[in-house]
Amino acid sequence: MWDIMLVNAVVITMDEERRIIPDGAVGVEKNRIVFVGTSEEAKKYKAGEVIDCKNHAVMPGFVDAHGHGGHSVFKSIVEDTSYWMPVMTHAYKNYITDEFWYREGRLSALERLHAGVTTGVCVLGSQPRCDSPVPAMNNARAYAEVGVKDIVCTGPCHVPWPHRFSRYEDGKRVKKEVSYEEVLESLETVISELDHANEDRTRAYAAPFGVITSVDPSAPTPADRCVRLTEQDIRQAKDIRRIAEKYNTRIHTDAFGGMIRLAYQDKEHALLGPDVHLQHCTGLSFDETLILADTDTHVSVAPGMRQMTYRTPVIELLELGAVVAITTDGSMLSSGFNMFDAMKRAKMIFRRAMNDDYYLPSEKVLEMTTIDAAKCIGMEKEIGSLEIGKRADLIAVDLMNPRLMPRIHIVDTLVGNGHPSDIDLVMVDGRIVLRDKKAVCVDEEEVLLAAETEALETAERAKHLHPFIEKKPQWGKTKIYFDEVRFDMEENRRDGGHY
Image 1: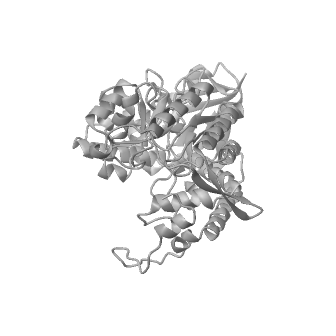
Image 2 (image 1 turned 45 degrees about the vertical axis):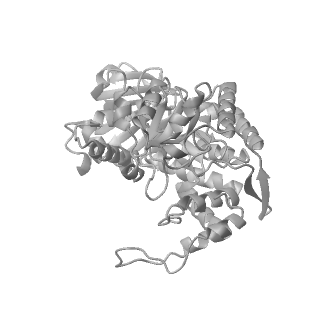
Image 3 (image 1 turned 60 degrees about the horizontal axis):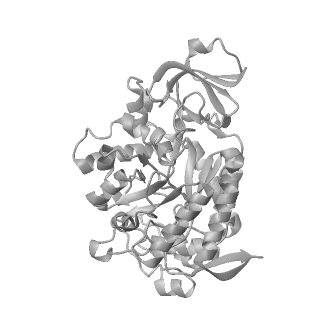
């Protein structure tokens, strides 16, 4: 007898044949899929629970190959500023309690759960919070409680070293300078304790803040400023490679134009290859695009405003055979964990970039958030499709609403008009963690209120956030103007800020 059987569904398998079964069924025993076929074929089997999925699409859970831990609590606080990175980095490095990472982690995991994300990558903070294993441990604990698979990513910040961090002990801020070597020790502790933990629902990847540490970490670098690797570039690449190989884990980091060509000067240790997935990759030259394809380096991309300035060569990468995943880069006001929205934006942005409405059909876009995203993070043998033997990560989408009718071309309909509110059920590793649109494993109200309290307490501690909390309403105005400076870089540096 199976544990659970889902019947009478439109089953979108994402298997090698990309089968769509109009009256389909999925059987689950323990944490694995044991049957995928028609509801008629499933009648010969019995299960402890049979779920009638009439008028629902059952499909693999979304795989969000890049997002952040920490950002969810700052939604609506740090907005409308050109100083976003220094403001956020200062908060993360100097005004966050250990408990913050747990409370925020539950909030972000809950948002992902409602969005149908069954596996999500979490880069801790903006520049990764890497001075201690505690943030990663608490993020992983939070995701485990909610029931979403978590890939925790942390590693060295950008140069120069040492970095200044603060911890809170008995409510008091304790400042400390942390060396590069101490950060690597912390990274090793995180990977050794979290990778394959929580019955393999938690993974941990090595994640430095950028492929190269000597250039702009958040934007393309002009060719005349991107000439040769520094000693720290070479050292860090060797160290990250050594740690990843020691623990048999993967590497995840950001990349922008100029970094790829520069990293490739040291082919042996470059953070490139099939065990790496790179986020953003905006502003790449064609030479760099070829390097990514030739080295089988995977790419994840968030289809947001950044693409309007420097485009990720998504179409070129795909045509060269590279694996590309669509991600959310969440969660802030401009980029929540809504994978349906990410799919829609990807179609729009990259079609406009090519001036051709026939790129990125809906079927390809859905691949890029399921099976291709699983390939991107090195887990395609376990998740990303509904196949016998794979782990039972799936979602049931309610099709009985005006946005999703008629059901003539179901994939087009889901990609074009789907919304997280359509998701009735989420299963992770054979365990139902969302039923009737409600989280099963946690008290949603308690999670939400605790996160809001944490946001207010953090903003109270961090004086540089006060002007953002005291935002003036802009009713009737076409453009925002300011009466006073909201962020002082010099004061930020005096207070221990990195920038």
